[in-house]
Image 1 (tube, helix red, strand yellow):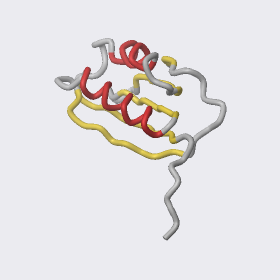
Image 2: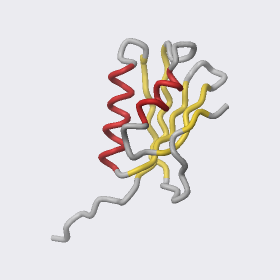
Image 3: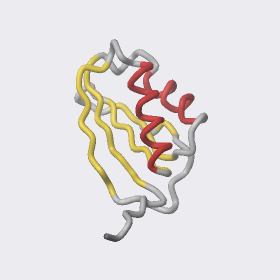
Length: 97
C-alpha cells in the first residue's frame, strides 16, 4: 500500500460569521499569523462576515486557524471552510479591503 504524502502547501478560505467586524478581527489575524509560516489575506465582506485565506504547510495552516478560533471563541458563531488550490506566490498575511 503506497504511503500518503502530505502536500507541501495547502490553501484554505474561511468565512467567519458572528460578531467579527468592528472587534479587531482582521488586525488580530495578521498579528497571530506572524507566529506561523502562513500567507494570505483577511478582509471584511459586505454581509458582515470576514473572509480569511491562509496558505502554507498543512500543520502551520491548521495551527494558525485553530489559534484564530481560540482568540475569537466568543465572537465566531459559524465558520465555512473551503479548500483552494495553493498558489506559489502568496505574500505574508495581509489585510485587504
